[in-house]
Image (cartoon, rainbow, N blue to C red; front, side, top):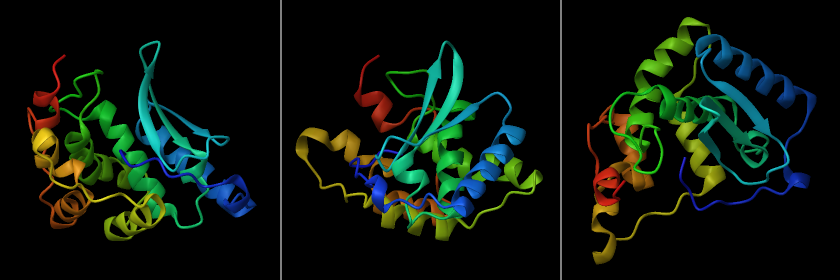
Length: 187
């Protein structure tokens, strides 16, 4: 996810036994569905976000405490976020210019299609509309304003929350072989 990095102070987070059990169950479903990826909750980080990365060549997905324990984020929002980050590792299509990971549009497309299907096969489901509402409420993604200096970036549907949300809900999220972000930033 790429947002403006809002913070959720620890004292305002939901760290109840019920929430911890929900997160543990969700992580177990992801590990069963996508065995090549390692999942971690970085509970001390108050940023409302998650990230895909490689550690010694091993695919990792980290969900930060500010998102994992945010009271506005439920199981649906957590599920989509983890699917999106997993999609950076498992999606085919365009890659980020700075890392061997799928770009935002490819990760979104994979999360809404292949990832969702694989997760459902292990008994885990989510409602996309609810997930996006929860993420929007917690992360408060800013609307991209057109700028002549950054036209390539603003044209990418995945970098504009309103367009991104609508593309996902309408089933129009496309996995391009080359996207505006990748072509705008040289390797």
